[in-house]
Image 1 (tube, rainbow, N blue to C red):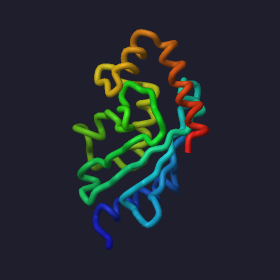
Image 2: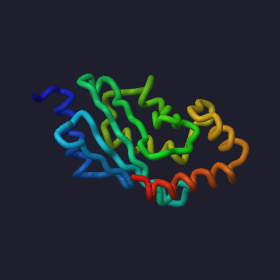
Image 3: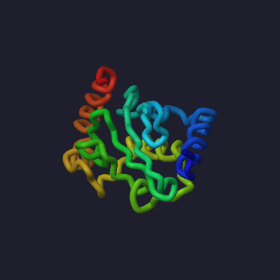
Image 4: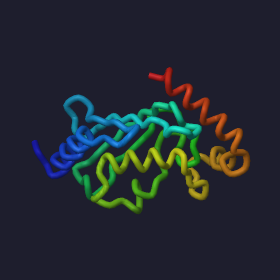
Length: 152
């Protein structure tokens, strides 16, 4: 069954394989193009450096007119990531546009790691720490990075 959403996801997948952005990988789960696993590597020279963070992306038949549901599977400590792994990011909500493809979504999430928006907190403790005690915030981020190596 090939719907416009599925065709688009196949195109996104080909593009991601042929020209993958640095520090990002993703692929559909077995036999289900609508459900993806992705990995984002923490950007170099940031507190996130060395982390490997797993995500899932759930697409609907409305893609690309509606954004996927994206969640971190890895435990995260970040001002814009909820305890359940959901991400508070404008392009996944009200600023979505069909021009965004998989690579753009994952790249945006990767840059959000180092460039949080503490004014729109999903995790108020992380947001407060990011604004008021950067050293402690970075220490907590390093803990999450180290956990990302051992977590399944």
